[in-house]
Picture (cartoon, rainbow, N blue to C red):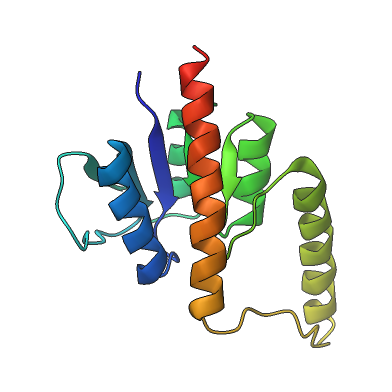
Amino acid sequence: MSCTIFVDADSCPSQAKNIILRAGIRLNLNVVYVANRKIPFSMESPLFKMVVVENKEGAADDYIVENVTDKDLVITRDIPLAKRLIDKNVITINDRGTYFDRENVERMLRQRELSMQMAALGLHTGMSYSTYNNKDVQRFASCFEKACMEMLKRQSSL
């Protein structure tokens, strides 16, 4: 069984997708985009697959969780999805260079809940992502390389 990189592709910036695809070719890894609509690849390879799921809340997340193994890597911005994946011992990162673990996912979930409660009260939390910039690309590339090496290490320990 070979390693697979799953991408929660709806919100993943094109710069990050390009890094992922180049690594897929370089390392001979399967890359699976999962979204509720077709998202084109910027380059072609038999290693790349697009999975279009039903257009309903959580469908892409459910597909990823049901099809991923602890030998794979997932890229997502979705914190609840990251939690589900960490619980399955799956290497999980976001497109801004965060390597998710139990501790930071729990903290992010608490922050998210607080932000949602404050927003419901009409209070602005100031928590939002800025535009995706060159620093984000560099942080992602570094984190992604580390995550790929961890994934390959897990694969070789079979």
